[in-house]
Image 1 (cartoon, helix red, strand yellow):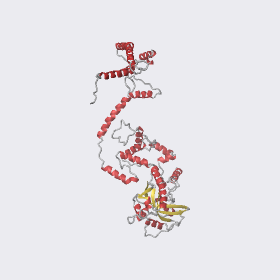
Image 2 (cartoon, rainbow, N blue to C red; image 1 turned 90 degrees about the vertical axis):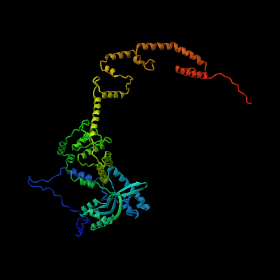
Image 3 (cartoon, one colour; image 1 turned 180 degrees about the vertical axis):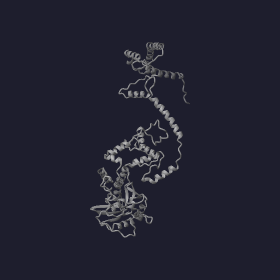
Image 4 (cartoon, rainbow, N blue to C red; image 1 turned 90 degrees about the horizontal axis):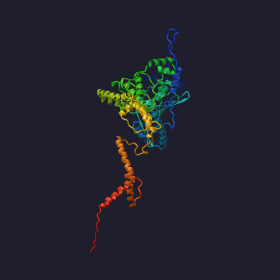
Amino acid sequence: MTSEDETAPPRAAAPPNARAKFPEPLSAPVEDHLTGPIGTVDPFALEHEEWRRQLASIGGRSPLTHFEDHASTRIELSNAHPAGLPQFITGQKILLSALIRDDLALRQARLAAARVTDKAVEMRTVRGLETVHLGIGLASWSFEGEDFTAPVLLRPLAIRRYGRDFELKLKKRPSVNPELLTTLREQFGIAIDARSLLELSQAEGVFKPQPVIDRLRQMVVGVPGFVVQPRLVASSFMSVSRQMLVDAKDLDTPVLSAVCGSEVAKEQLDRSYRPVTAPSPNERSPETDRALYDADAEQDDVLAQIDAGHSVVVRTLPGTGGTQTAVNAIGALVGSGKRVLVVSPRRATIDGISHRLNRVGLAGLAVTPRLLRRNLVEAISRNESATASRMRDVDDALLRLRGVLIDYQDALTQPDERFAVSPLEALRELTRLALLPTPPSTTVRLDDHALGHLTLDRSSVAEDITEAARLGQFQYGPEDSPWYGVSFDTTEAARVAYTLAVDLAETELPRLVSMANEIIEQTTLRPYETIAELGVYLRLLMGIRETLDRFTPRSTTARSPR
């Protein structure tokens, strides 16, 4: 539909091979004298043109104007069963087998649906794009030897596997293929108003695409070979290059000029960049410490530069808190009254940011075009239930706890007056010793008094230890002598223990062994080998003796039965 009044006489169609002529852009006038205005020249036109060329090639040929109409690339729904088509058009869920009842056509449709679904999952996961649409009506034509095939109307379509079948559901409202309108205007000078075209499909409150197709046929009646077919095809209809080219119209910015190699732009950026120092977390006021998540020193530095308005590039490794830093930056910028646009090539990153915002009670703070309605409802609910926070008590408690932790940290790093070493240094040294190939070990434990003496002149102690080692003190272990590790409080106690040991070894033990041998020989027990085994024998014999002592010798005569 044109932008002209419908009562106006029809405009003559453009010749089939004629390009639309647009007025040339007005360049700034150039005066002959030096004092007049001078035309603006893009010093990086070649670089900008190369960028635009690369943007135009993203994604290959656009399926919005060069759709490959093959059985393997689209699900043909033009001959859908009349019983299932109304349910599908009204946006209700329906199985593919309910739309296509013919076995051969259903088999081909399932093969195409599998390819379309796999590609949709890939684009959604990797690029964050919803590419599957229902194409309503297909326009085909040729221009300067090049063939074009474009859908007329587009409606987002959700498709997912359902066992061996596929479930389909139309979403949102239909829209006119924007690249079709642009191409018709550029090639044939035919201007069509998208809004008026959509109104034709909703003339009676029910979606009817046929009036749209009829009107398009009327508009292109003077173009030879232009055919509009009333078909329904589901496929991947997405083109990002054209919109990216529109966004790349104005590339005259200091950052992009610096990327192109402008020394002036580089100097300008260098002068404008004045890095700030992030305040220490131990000195930061609770009123300004409103980060949504914990941040380390490096993340604090990034947040400080962002808060100062600097353009920064942060390179992180997976799992090092990159998303967490982005969420903290969003919270700080929104808290200062700014709006934030978050762009990511992957939907998982956007979902991760939204999930982290929801975890801290900020559901609906971030809105996405895909979930705009739900995000707005969440934001309204959050604001309606919001209450004024009483942070004074929390801030006071934070200051007290922070003071305790700072004192503890200082105590760990403060050297002791007597030992001239801090507890943290002692732990580090113990850790170093424990990591040696053969770490030292000892059961000696020194009290505070002994440690205090070790801080004094230890030369005499070292001499005594050296002499003890020369005498063989450290050549014996627990397996060498039963006296190893024994300590006595006085010399008299050591003398008494020694006398008792001599008496046991020379008198009592030989007497015990002799008596035990006499007893064991009277039994069938094998000879004992150790004193411990002898103890087992003696306890066994004493138990037998106690049992026999309980029996009383008595004889009885049994009476014979009568």
